[in-house]
Length: 445
Image (cartoon, rainbow, N blue to C red; front, side, top):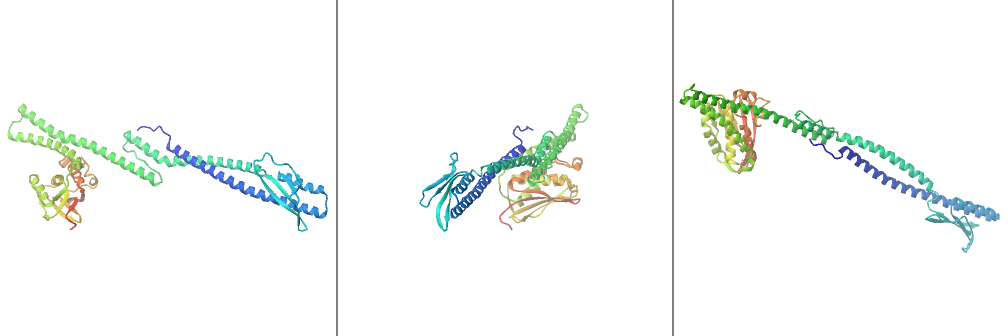
């Protein structure tokens, strides 16, 4: 398996999660800074207004009491120092009486506040102040922003660490599947993945394990098929060679009986080769299928007639139930005929002499069900799921049943293009019933 050279998925996920967190923290920090700045500015402005109002009240009190001008100047100088700007006192006509403090030349922006000096209900002066914006809150905001930055960096570090841990944990099932795939590629067909606790990784591991199980089973069947095919080809070939060599050497006479025995061995060898060719042809059935209405009754009659010699030879009785003339299926006539003959041949090979095979067909809604029921020994339960797999034969079939183990596989391949299916409907010591289910033409009956 080729090893990837890109960045690991866990690192990518961690970087993405950290990047998103950083963006969120920056956005949240900017919003918080803006809100706090505005709120603090409102508080400071209110406090400044309260200061100038208090100074106006104090100045009015001094004037009403006839205090000295020095005390009034002291109040106004302290006010300008506290506000950090210039304070101006104007008379009722707007004439400037005096100013205290210096204007804030270095401040980019200022704002003005004022208050009236009222003595015995009459406004005698106005106190105005030009104050720089942001000056009082600047130290506070610097400390606040520093604290916000430190908290953000700490949060980012913690979240980045958690992101790495979560990303590695979430990608662990993927690494497990990749490791299992590497072992499988290396020839370990027992390799399986465990998956994770989430549904997606469990489904991925399940799909991989199903594929691995299927591959392991296919490899087992391939090896088994190679052994069986070697046996099926070698036995008649060896017998044929031995018989011919014996006749050449003069050990056996070249009479009709010996020639017939040699012909039978050659026929057995040819039968295996023919079935292999049929399997190749059946696998191409989807490309060759020509679907058309096919009457079931004549089809069953033709199949029974074609296999009459085989059934007589094996001393097995073949009975075909009466089928309505209007029972029609949508299929490829040639493919369906071959599939039916393969199933009936399989039934004959598994039915002891003196027993019978019964073939029937009935309408079932918009489908037609054909059944081939033999009176053989039945199929072992562990073999039922595999009877339609190519080259599959149980140990019993290797010792006592003829054939290559691909007859039912061919039947399945031939039925698939027309939407037909084949299945083991019932099996047991009394025999086996195989069901061929196909689309029906002409109504639902």
